[in-house]
Image 1 (cartoon, rainbow, N blue to C red):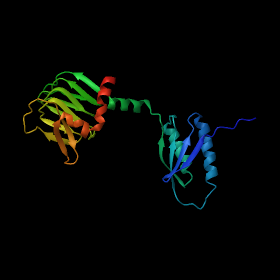
Image 2: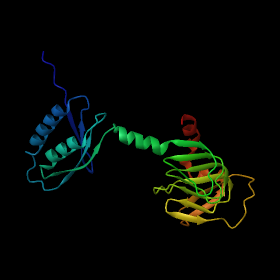
Image 3: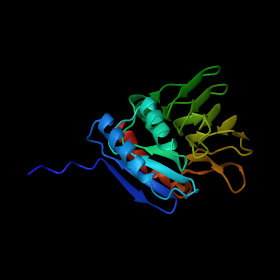
Image 4: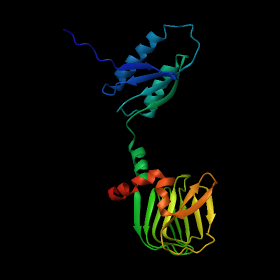
Amino acid sequence: MKQKEKQLITIKGTKEGLIFYIDDTSSFRDAYDELEHVLSTTSSKEDSEDKVVSVILKFGYRYVTDVQKTTIRELIEKDKRFIVERFDSEVISKKQAKNWFDQSEVKAICRIVRSGQVLEVIGDLLLIGDVNPGGQVRATGNIFIMGNLHGIAHAGKDGNEEAIIAASYMNPSQLRIATFISRAPDYESKGVYMECGYLDKENNKIAIDRLQVLPYVRKELRGLERRIHNG
């Protein structure tokens, strides 16, 4: 008895449009050919339908190149009733994976940042040491300083407004988070407890408070300990 061929294309209708599930174990050529057949069959129905239908393509664990995406988009949008909204895949490129790793990694550095020096990292910075007046530290993520902060600290420098700055002794000449800037605080920190700076979105400014408030204003930082241990 001849074995039934595996279905490579599954279509599901939603309120927003259609989802095309593309089998991720077949060759791209076979999946493309079946998609072409399915579309030719579908387009023969409801010829009077003028509504443009949004299509999402899900490829599972198949990596799809930009060329393949263009090929599939052209095939689908050849039928004027369809427009491709996006491509979803559980697989990312090495470049994307590296960028994600760099952004999520905690960089632990032990040094003193002296006047005129700039320390800049991708991801979160854990500095074990001081930032002297005239020194600068910058990070695309958060900045944690196990020491004295007297210079400039710029967290979320690429626009991350959720980034925070924390220091054992907080007496900066300037704090920056994304595009927001805060001058030195009007009071002298006593250094009794660690302080942090974060963006208070209600008041649209950088707020400085005790480190203990962080779990409440930035809940995602609860995973920091695990990231440091893994990093």
